[in-house]
Image 1 (cartoon, helix red, strand yellow):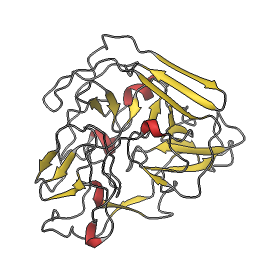
Image 2 (image 1 turned 90 degrees about the vertical axis):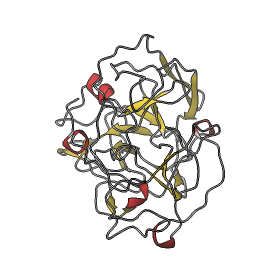
Image 3 (image 1 turned 120 degrees about the horizontal axis):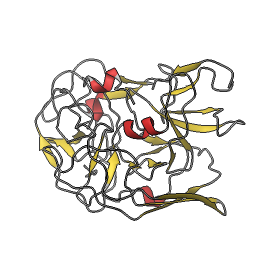
Image 4 (image 1 turned 180 degrees about the vertical axis):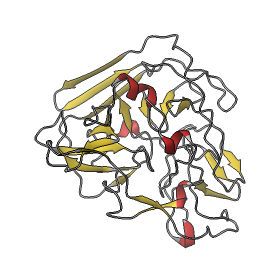
Length: 318
């Protein structure tokens, strides 16, 4: 997939008042950086030394997904300067509803968002926090902290799990995503709804309408961060806290999705879309996520900008 200017140029910005938690987290990174940097992606020059294996099938009322987590595309070199972990085969096993339903309330992400059709998880959080205010989490795609992400905006957890933090460029190349047609199916969310990327119908309910690049409805907050003990400086996308949802400012809802007709669902379905702007990978669920996608940890808490409820203090995966 060609590099998108907002990503390859290092100016892709993100944020949300939601963090993810893990049961046995790696050491938290504590920093004092308050400005985003240029995102440096490791070139995809390495072929996986294990064959990608994935199975997706319907069993009763569930969609059963098993995989070894090895991508079906080239990756960056791991370990690397920003990420010390080698890729190793996993034993992923997930069950999601085959006929998901929209819930009465949205559910914030506290773990993996879902899994791609190649068996690699979508897991957007990072265990990097501001030193004096650990409820301020660094956005991994802001370039503020070097996490050794590769061309597919992915890297590796200490247990060897390769996972996507942003647009899975290698996978999108394999499915031949095009600006001239609706995105192909690229994965399944933890609540069972389908995941697409970037391009959809301009009229969500009309498959004969023009194709357009869909945009999120998250925007940078106005003004400056509160400072002391929280970071100071202008809201620029360094932290997930730098963003807020502005209804109607984009094509998608607070879950980065919409009810729409898609090639796989001609009668319509709720569907998520990865976007080039924040949140890229959604951070809220429209349905009820399956427990096996959760990263268990301490309960939510903490305060956000200006004293507003903020993201839960936790230790998301790197």
